Length: 308
Image (cartoon, rainbow, N blue to C red):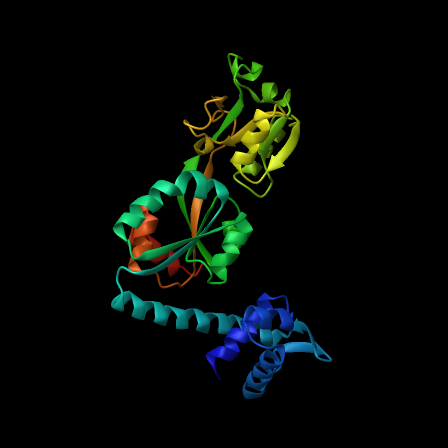
């Protein structure tokens, strides 16, 4: 049995049982992948996949257990390699962070700036996407950690730690009537066309929940994946924006007025997700603590070893 065979096996499953796509992802040939998986099945004495001719159509019951064990073996093999690097190169390497636009644009820059000063020899890589995508990046081992507000707790292979709470503001062009009302209410908001986040992003569920609980219908005329796009269309006069409070830039958004909306919506929590059982290098712990000072090494390690 070879680690290469386990990698091929896991990649085929992750590619939706598409062997050709798995081979492309692995930069090898489709016949080579098929041959190695057949050799693995012969050695184990069980079929991992159900096949229709040459096409893989499903995973057998035994195969599901074998795939889970293969993932564990590959994870531990990576941990061994990381542990060696930890002792041979204490302050160099690569830190890959998967996160959403709001975090990358408005929250992470000062954290990354301080981290880069402390670890000049660590290469930083940012992968941006929606919450599901960034979680999958960590599950697949393509990122060391994910930072997002939504969706991270839907992945059993991840251990999720709360970082900070935040709420929302309403933005509108200067002089807009909504900026002049004595008290901002959901009823007042419901009278205006609204522009806010897409359903999968940045606490959108909290916005929907607030209107639903009051028996109101929000007139959402446009949704977007990030606050910069929302603000662009607010400037065009298409509606009033509801965005994360940290997404208002004092220098760049002076043409937009804002109203605090914390009294209208339940707060949301931004979280960090790590792969269960992962071996983290020292600078990863330091980055996490720069981002969320309450998350010390002991608390992070406890989460990583928690069986869920």
